[in-house]
Length: 122
Image 1 (tube, rainbow, N blue to C red):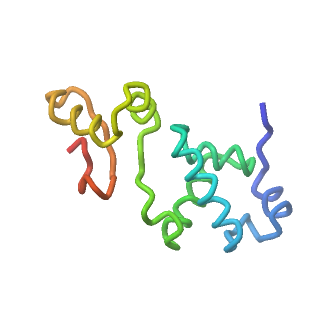
Image 2 (cartoon, rainbow, N blue to C red):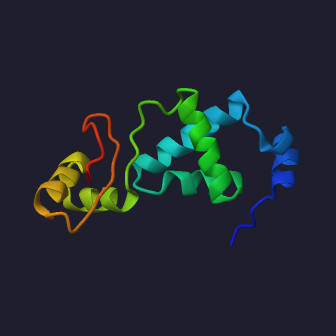
């Protein structure tokens, strides 16, 4: 198991107070996030593993990358639903629509994909 860095260790390792985000790290966060999302892995978990920080810290860094526009067009996808869509050979958006249309409210898939508008599960 990979050992995570404490806040102080992350600050020392990345050279910024309390692990604060700089432009280079924000770009790297976005790159790692996109790569994981394309392969169906949990993108925030991938950021946490890549930088050896907690999931909470990675979540804050992803939010910062979104806020600065680096992940503006990157949809938030459920990695398990994405894996199912890939296994079935169907587009992720089609799978989410089918779940919404045919599950009768018993199954919820939340997604904020720009092409779909509001949450799919609503």
